[in-house]
Image 1 (cartoon, rainbow, N blue to C red):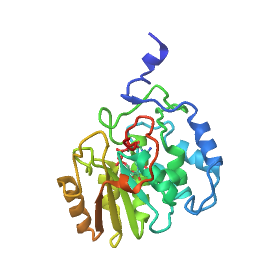
Image 2 (image 1 turned 180 degrees about the vertical axis):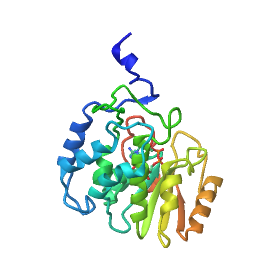
Image 3 (image 1 turned 90 degrees about the vertical axis):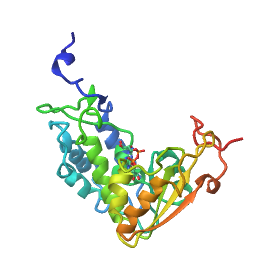
Image 4 (image 1 turned 30 degrees about the vertical axis):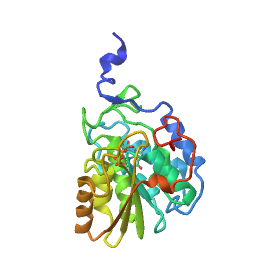
Length: 258
Ligand code: C8R
């Protein structure tokens, strides 16, 4: 039995921290294009990297709090002009494809979103290192893990800051296109400001029958959450009609049928 087995570093059920996490953060920050929604203050990548690391290093990976990330978020608060935000749930790639040619912005286009996209990270009490063996899983270990809390805090700031019309891309091939347990459902939708308009686009997998639609019960639920907050709501079925014809994506999921 190896040393790492005894140390308990592999006790969590989620993927371990991404190899070279610090280096990737630094590189992504250095190469981040300077656009108007990039950052609120000056961008100091050294400082941002340090704030990111000290948010979770040597801490209990199941005891993440919003406060742990406060300094990081303050250093690079996402600020996006009105009418440009695109939210999504289970449709990240498609939402990005929709947003890009239209000059619209998903959270991954903001500095902190781009730094963290597709990475995993957690620490270990009393250790200066990242745990590359395992990190807590949302379901099997704890909800208050550093990855989940990071996306919750950042998504909340993003949604709160939105003005004008906000768009959201939802997957109508799922039974519930709107899922109250998702970050869009539990964090973003309930934090939109009054007077914002939410425009929902339902997408359907060409290979599968549509399972949810603008008149389905999950969207009705979304509508009622929004109307309580005085957020206007528009819903359209079948976003694909509005996308340019393009080659099927690698897994073919959202490709245009022949
Ligand atoms: N958002 C949330 N999670 C994000 C994210 C992001 O921008 N970017 C990444 N890579 N992730 P899902 P959802 C990771 O279930 O829960 C914002 C996180 O590990 O398909 O409704 C964004 O603004 C996270 O656990 O969608 C968007 O509008 C999963 O991907 C919603 O929140 C979430 O994947 C999407 O969150």
